[in-house]
Length: 111
Length: 115
Picture (cartoon, rainbow over the protein chains, first blue to last red):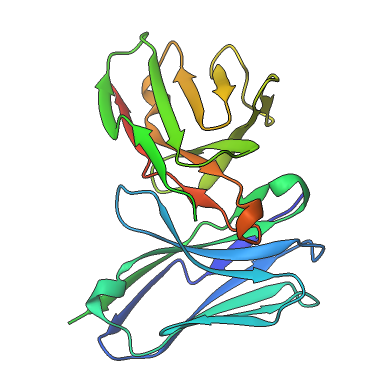
């Protein structure tokens, strides 16, 4: 059974800090991995997609890395802002487009 | 990218009734997915809906409780039947992004409260 774990479950930081969110998965035979952002009561916004053959992807202040052999991905957020406050979810995709989601990291960036 | 419109955005329903959630995509897609997100939890896949065939349900979900329609390549509905307070969740539809390198796109979700 594929399991996806995200650590920490919650994180509170002052504005301007750099931070790292962690995602681990048990089955390394992934197709790709995707990071999402979810604002309270809302749907999911795709942040970064990493194909299984890639090691990292960058978009603005966000950088996601993937290490399949160790079953880990990290999402790095540089110079955090209050607008970054949200829940961040990682999803591991195996065949047939089945997504397995972690339980998320709830981020609060204090002004 | 795919733009997904989901309706309603929220509803409060009486127990024992049913609610149908609609999901409209701005492009043709082969597979559509329905997820449930219970309060404080992550997303759980309910079923996969392909056009022209019966939906494939995940363990713990049955067609009688969550009937799904997929009449064409841009539209799907999920019905939550005979609702109880335990069905209070956010329900989200998603599409596979085979034209976007496998990226998934989600609707904004339907927040359902059963009283």
